[in-house]
Length: 582
Image (cartoon, rainbow, N blue to C red; front, side):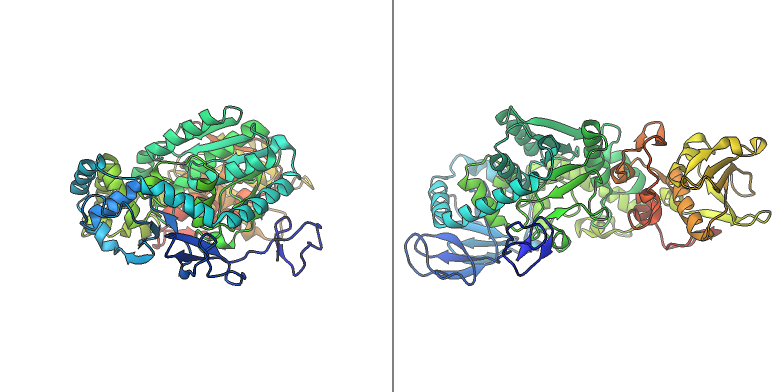
């Protein structure tokens, strides 16, 4: 059993800590009724397993999870399989990843088929067939699917609604937010929350990454029109251009998705800060454990500082235990409007050029977003050539760019290398190379360490002393410095501390931020007190808001001290000393 409130396992039906009912994450399987031609969701140990709830006939095991294939995708499947128009119009077609199930019979499609397909000719064929396509069978099939699984749907609703009510009861209603992406999971989550709380005025925040599918923007606008009482906010990074950032630090990759922080989490953080300042909020979002290995490790309710991307929020997912087929059962059973992209065959709708998109999703984009896809491929080839890949087209078309790690081949990679020399005149002092001149912006970036006291420093040296906030004892000295081989430099001296190297490492993180900041907005999201702001004028820390928690200079929360370290790090050593990683 699982307590959704305490995020813990227990053998009891009532949580021994909070006293709330516990929930069992019961695995489900998909069976197939040959007579009714629909999938049936059943638990492995339930009494009537293998029996169709509609006709009472025997069923057989099919798979773990499924999604419906809408008439638009079914038409595409006919083209791919070189079948005549409407050859599958009366078939019950479902899919899981790249495997289709036609009337219960498995038909895998190899990834190579999507990679090698002529998208232009397929697009023309789809247009010529569109007017003749017969979609009349599909609604009846879906109605049978809903009827066959009505008890499962009711169980999903009852559990999810109860979870939402219990979780929301711990927060003021005005501090409850829905994270809305326009995808199926967030759509189901939003509907669950609104119905559970019977409150149509809940705040929705949509993070417009500027890389959304056209259908996503259309759907979000339609959703907003259909929910006029909701407070619907758009969060968008107006200061950055995705293409220009790619030119500077390279395209995002699977392990280096800087775009999420810069174009989604960061702007959403700003929107939350503008509404709630330093108040803690509850955000309902559509994370599911079956989506990936990493998400399976999440908690259904999460407020751990390491796990939560935006420190100001506690996040909770009512659909955490749902599978794809559960999502579609809910949306179709509750007659919830959804993003049209799913009708075309997309199984996930995020950024259209996300490095996590599979070969089939890229194939669909070549058909339905041809201009964007061609321009993106041309950019990727230019990038591959610029970093010295011998066969740039192969590197791109085989998806190797998605596995890229670090900043090899990029001029900007040098910005994250902390170059320093030990000061021969003073103990516990290091001289760090800067990429630009010493400034007040750099000095105030040391606010997390304590109170800035320039009045205590040597004025002729433009020295600033930093005092420990608890003892008022000096712990750091900052001053601009001239050093052979360094156009710009800062001397940082530590004092009155037990571990000088640890403090120097944290200080070096701020130097790295100053040298390498690309306004990714990660630091804004990390700061629980809202003290950090990043704009066209630079990186700012408000001393009135900073609580000196030092999360922004702690590797546990920000690996390498700056998110750019992850994206621009290279294996080669620098030409002088380098601060070792902890």
